Length: 266
Image (cartoon, helix red, strand yellow):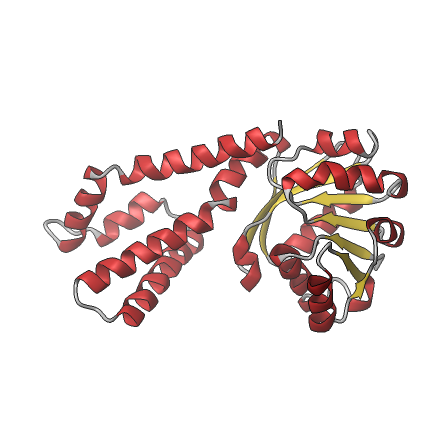
């Protein structure tokens, strides 16, 4: 396998490394990383046995596929630094809001670029990622990117115009889920459950509900109706959520995150 390089060695880069090594997509000896924090590079080398590089230029020269795992505001500077060393190489960006055109503008108009939006459950191999490819990409580029991100969970290919919406939904979505789990647990504590029990029940309940949607393919509304029997406890709880604008609040949260992602690209 040709060398895979990571610019940035944060949590998401760590999750991707773990996935590709665990799934035997890459050997540790074929992976390298550069990060401005030497301690992060040392930690990745110690955990996975990967190589580290002392500079952006060094990594760009050594790797054939480069994952830009840096903050959105850093992508332009990184792209300008490595542009003379990435001709003919595949660039994969996981920076929220940064368009393919922007990366090509600061590297090469003909650069092969794939834009990906993963999410944090990738840390436990339960991630959801969506990717979009530049017209300059080859079939082998698309296949490689799908293989890499399927190593950390589900991965779908979409038109780039939809990636900011993905950011608002599945990119930011885990935070909404964590908030809901915490609120469910708080409700259990309010009703008398011990905190540790309430939290386990809340997390497992949300996990189970999601699994039921994915495994059955049924509409969530149908599954909700299975739980909410006439005159029962569940419909009482649902009535409270509806009266407090639960649905509209979640919809507005996703849309606000989408708008923020769109703004980052500008």
